[in-house]
Image 1 (cartoon, rainbow over the protein chains, first blue to last red):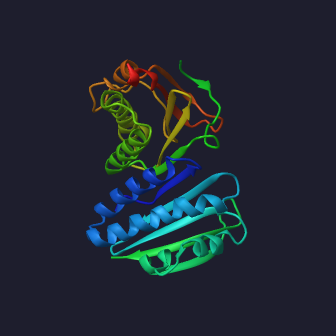
Image 2: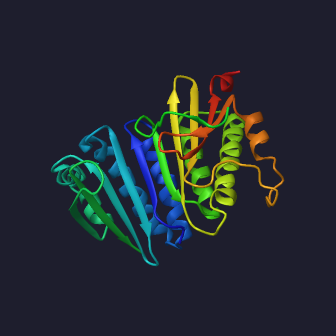
Image 3: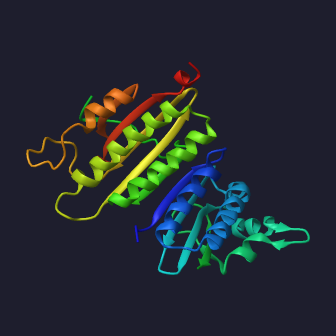
Length: 125
Length: 142
């Protein structure tokens, strides 16, 4: 594995595409099947689309940690109850919650570095 | 310019990437720059120049910054201001010094200088080594 990859992304058009490219590289190196890679990219789009609305200072931090069969995505610098807001924003009528459907685990943790809390997602493959 | 303390752009950067300084992670930086180029509609030649210069700077970090086998961070920051893209490659290693035992050809910094509009070598406020490259995106319309 190539070690954890951390990104800090400003609000704007670069955030989504850059995160998707980095996630693709990290998962490709971890031999993730293409279907789960696609799920992960869908999660990335949700993260950057909705996450930037719940950040404390205009920047979203994302830490990627790929293991043998799982990717942990830690989304930080969120405002208080920002993680809950992000999850709620991923609800699509008639489809359900996109983040809950494509990830295996969602949990909220107190912030370690900036902001009030972190949303931690796990994607198994 | 060398040895001058430069202000950190971490807070202002549009994209910051922090990775362990390993050879395989240079490719991640290159792909992230590819996404950036696509969104900004940078022409192929300009994007190629940016990717090559930044790859050289990152490779310098991987090869030279932590020579005793220890692992350290490779940080890349990209900031867009008008028609200028500034990319900073930063490490916490030994700094940029001549190495008679260097495994490379020593072409990295001259190559970067020829590809970027402006190059600054120095340190940020935390004394981390920085290569700061500024690229003009205005030329892409020419």
